Image (cartoon, rainbow, N blue to C red):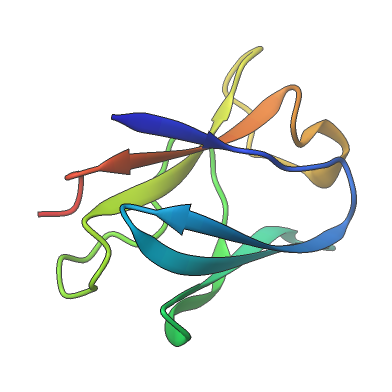
Amino acid sequence: MAVVIPLSAVAYQSLRVPLSGRACRLDVQQRGTGLYAALWVDDSPVLAGVLCQDRTWLVRQSATTLPGDLAFADTQGTQDPDYTGLGSRFVLVYAENTNG
């Protein structure tokens, strides 16, 4: 099952969202070198400062307590995401059972 995470076209945002029944916090920040993400699951850090790229899993490890992974997708091509297209051109998707 895939879930689209609602994002806005702003340079920095932090949101809390339930994923696979877990309390998750996601931070997305635009920097000069790209869009970066940080993720906490049940208040434990899972990743920090990960560069977001088109159709590339963010977590990529089965040692986390989250039974899935997150990835950005460009709905109009294959560009890496930037904040100006978040929520429209660039969507963030959570898919269960991708990292195992």
